[in-house]
Image 1 (cartoon, rainbow, N blue to C red):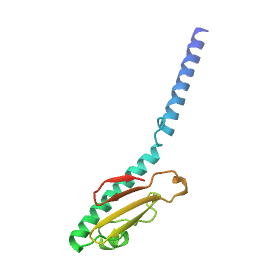
Image 2: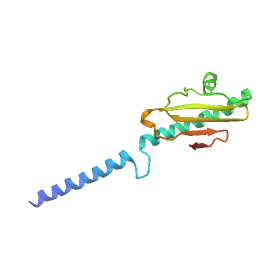
Image 3: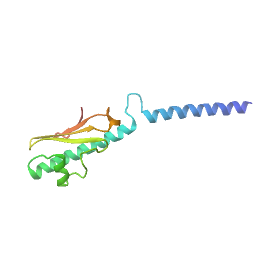
Image 4: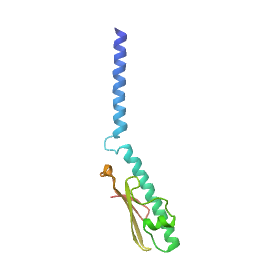
Length: 127
């Protein structure tokens, strides 16, 4: 009888631990983003930095900043600015003076995800 009680206690403790771990990894800590969002947002930030670096190289060789399509056609970036990781990338350029690349979520499952941008200062900002 004592052994049955010990086994039931152990099963109960394991069930509680499993439930807590499952909830922690599926939703993230309180106030934190889910893991899938964190991973995709880090990827989008990396894309923005790559595009910003490509803009700098393009400026050095052409004397002005370029659109996303121009950077892709030039071979400065290897991906399209449309629906990458559920985000669309757009460029607002002012010749050789300024640029701002914006990444906005377009995937319906990502409507509450952040819109990010980078400019010639190479600082990624959340809007």
